[in-house]
Image 1 (cartoon, rainbow, N blue to C red):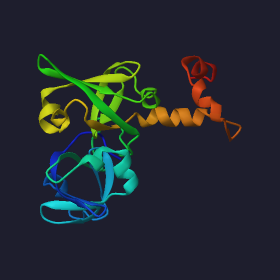
Image 2: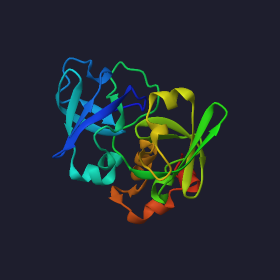
Image 3: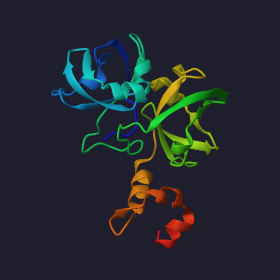
Image 4: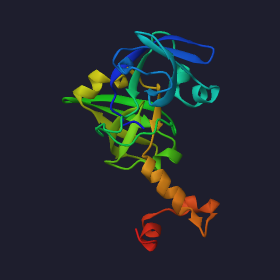
Amino acid sequence: MFTGIVEEIGTVSALSGGKITVKASKVLEQKELSGSSIAVNGVCLTVASSSADSFTADIMPQTLRLTNLGKLSVGSKVNLERAMAADGRFGGHIVSGHIDGTGTVASVTPEGNAVWLTVDCPTDLLRYILPRGSIAIDGVSLTAAEVGDSYFKVSLIPHTRQETTLLNHKVGDMVNLETDVIGKYVERLMSFENNQAKPESKKKLSYEFLAENGF
């Protein structure tokens, strides 16, 4: 479990044979790193081995196909976050490290001390994104300020721009998206009646449906 608060920016030093090696420092501080989880651009990976200045993890072909990790190369910068400790603080929101899909950067627009980032997003993911709700982009916990029929917008404060890779992206770049996990579980649970799944029920989740069922 993660919170979407990036601890540091790492640098890919090797990527081949289904393995990725990332140079880092802060996320390597714990004593027993092997077998632990680190989110790389929001993707939960298991550390296979580590050294004084880097860690190596395995990446399945499926992960490379469905996330922007397949777009990385040696020298690429990535957002890193260790799994949250049981006594940790939730600075962001509940992030599982399981990417729901990808979006495409549509525009990057400065406004005062902020920068608006607009992301084109598949409609099957937009159903879980709501104005002022949480969204993780490349592992960064953000608030969706505006949601349209095919896009959403977030506003990046100076700290986020300095401490993450989000402003390294250009228009057309792919970003990893993880939507609010609570909404997905609610929808799944509401799709059952008498312990039987109703395949068509995904289309029926609405304010009216929730009201009728006591929510």
